[in-house]
Each structure stands twice: as C-alpha cells, then as structure tokens.
Image (cartoon, rainbow, N blue to C red; front, side, top):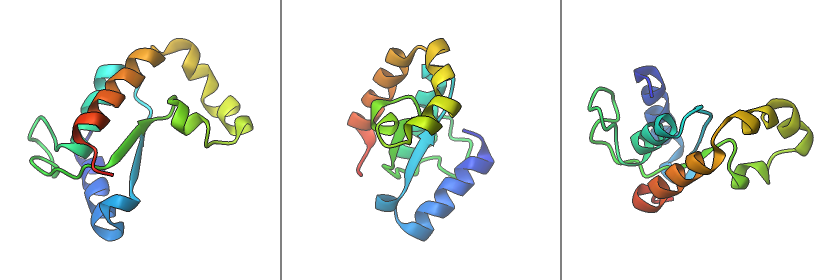
Length: 107
C-alpha cells in the first residue's frame, strides 16, 4: 500500500473511528492483497509509511470475497467485478485475507 493511501486510511480512521472503517481491496495477487491487509490491521510491515507500527485492526476484505459479493448489487458486481473472478486465484486471495483477519482484525 503506497504512502498516500496509508495516510488516507489513517486519517479516515482517526476521523470516523476504527470500528466504522472497512478497507476494500482489489489487488490482483494474494501476496499484494495480504501486504495491504496486514498494513491496515497490524501496521506497515515494510516500516516505510505512516502506518509503520500502527495497529489499526481494521476490517479488510477483497472485492471478490463472498461477504462483499453478497452485499453488492448483482448488476453492479456483474458489470464491475465478475471478469476479475475469471482471472484471479480467488481461493488463494480469500485464504490470505481470512488468515490476516483472524490474526489481526479487531473489528
């Protein structure tokens, strides 16, 4: 997660409270999604950004996960996301984010 997005997440969390923030990812690879998820839950693992050492514990999901899919209009999902499901390793991404949530999410 780039430094600008880290600053945005931190600012929004301070403004609205961690319990009211959900981070929605769209990374194409499980490893990239996992790094972003770890950043907003346990802190930036690269220690490069404003979230270095900051454990926000935010709720974090990937756009292809069932929890999100079930809460988005089917028409919108079909138009905007369904093609991604065909080319991504959805099981690997879901496993990566499930692991991160089980370890670090507080909300």
